[in-house]
Length: 81
Picture (cartoon, one colour):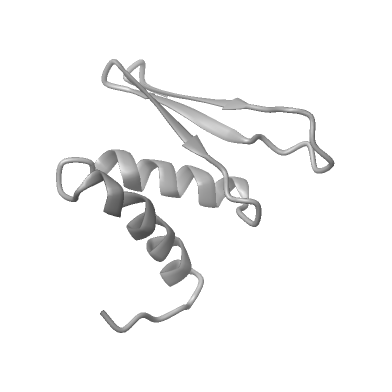
């Protein structure tokens, strides 16, 4: 893993003991990505990197929704936009 990108998980006490969020360090900035209750670890990381990589391309309030749409598309859902 390169020094410019480090991933850390944060965890609170819960029944499933899955991390509640991930923290991705990228280019000197810490990004905290909260987990959705139904997400797998891979979904959270993919969504997190989608948000980081597209921060300049889309408005911040739309990024959260767009990142979820991308995860769902990867699972076979289709959207009419």
